[in-house]
Length: 100
Image 1 (cartoon, rainbow, N blue to C red):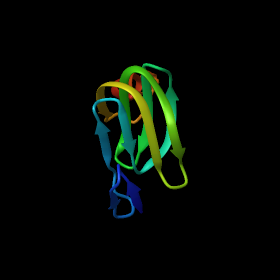
Image 2 (image 1 turned 120 degrees about the vertical axis):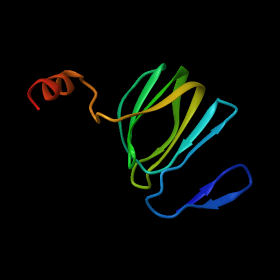
Image 3 (image 1 turned 135 degrees about the vertical axis):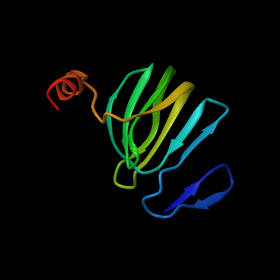
């Protein structure tokens, strides 16, 4: 897979997960499988490395190609975090902890 980054082409081995953040305002991601949930403050993105939470302000999708696994976001990025639980609703996590 090739990735265009400001007058520079980068070749990324197939399946590698890459995050590129420019000036905290534009984020490019590879190996995106799905967008689980989003609004202007939070994006939950399923990647090859797990569920990624992106927090910020005025976040919006600039480009999405799920077939190629590419996502570009625009806005002010304040935090990125991987969720080890791999779920969004917390209920399954709580029940799993109680009953294994």
